[in-house]
Length: 352
Image (cartoon, rainbow, N blue to C red; front, side):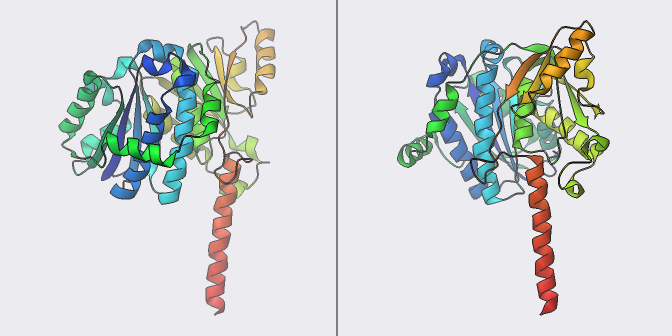
């Protein structure tokens, strides 16, 4: 997830405080909708090649107690903004970066690879917006950082414009209210683990890794499946190598939350270290892979270890229809279909 040359970047700083979360069912969805609109306009009007949303959680209590709610909100963002980015251009990189309350000083911002790349690229132009009830301290930290980079600022819309647009288009979805009612408090853990193929990293993977960043206090252990275990996968010829998949996960975690340590390793069996390491206390899984917890905890108890807690992350749609989920298999199939279409066009050209 390398940023490359960030000649034109859209940066949104969304400050979340405890007011929005006293009752999650009454969350200010208007802010979320405004933010999604800003992303679309930013990509269309400014032709950005990088889009970054910094989710700044200003209250320690909110960060500690409302993990599931924040995770659901990020899932909404990945779902909505990813659709916009795909519609405009597949070349735009988009991520939501998590900044907890205790990491908002200028020196903390320098830990993010995206911010480091800005420091090295003096020709960058930043379209900057603040959303939510951000404190002066947070705003000042970001402004001081960007000023130190000598980047140019542009602003494309005012708050009033967004309010008018949201009101006129009535973009609030009934499903969002439905999802909001699922919010619940989650226990945070020092050491969390998860595993997967992580081929062609997509927004479902990013949400899984985001959930790990929100729950982990100290270290995230990620097992990336080795090639020997993937021989029966569909469209294997379009799968990325193990080295690439591991590097992408490392980069993603560094971008999402650099204040949490990452241990990315090769997964050589179905359970990995989750079944054997006593210091691990929580497994992060998708709704599709949560069934693995039974075998893992059974093995742990046979070894005299405490069972792992389970944190389940929802699946995100493919964007084609509501019945299919985003998956690496789906992406590989699309990639191969694209190659077939190109080959067919070339053959037709030569035939004429």
